[in-house]
Length: 127
Length: 207
Image (tube, rainbow over all chains, first blue to last red):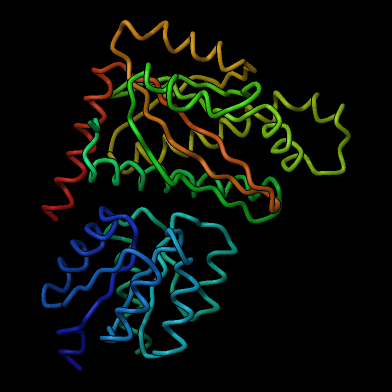
């Protein structure tokens, strides 16, 4: 139980490199031992998950190609154990509801220490 | 030759998308429906380049909402929609049962409100993320021809002015509209903006 959160893998999906950098930096500040994998689109994320299932995933919504919520849905159908945090600048009710329906947590952008804490809380799961 | 580096452009696009998300949230409360508002691209051009690259693509007159803002850098922000698109946005905002005459009456007010929402959302996102304070003037609504806009841009060209051009995708009630948000900046203000973006990026790397 004590070492519950050690050595986990996190997949960061965002078309913005800056966003991926911010998420990665904040997460590694809390969990320096986590392994981080990045994807720049929903399609790439699905391919990455097929090869190597991560423990956790942060997913942007608005990206070129498929919507992040659609990618998250596919990933969760194939790998229900992955815990997903939807990070989005689109803070409307519809986007938040969609995230909840998927069983993911919705986190409003910009990415800050506080929003990362929300995601990490969801990753830890109900104990 | 690009004025912004790839990573600087990425950071600005992300900042404006956070702003666009906030604006979409406010707009969706007005129209009672989901609004999609995204900023797929950001580019810095010289004022002469905007005449060549942006204006010729657009037919007809523009509906513009402009606002000045002040802070560590000063700029004039101009939201540009073609006039017919502006009218359809107003229709979506005011409810589609309105007649054209009634719509025309509300056009100025509705466009100022739209401009106010989008511009302030973008400025607040920029201020929050770059950790600066920006103040703004009241929005002004003007309908002008591409020639009028072009001559207005060339007036300031001697002062080595730059334009930060954001392409905007707006979908209200299933109607797709696109427009542009343009920031007119002096070279001093542009450099100040870039410095703040670089400071933001340095902070990420140091976190």
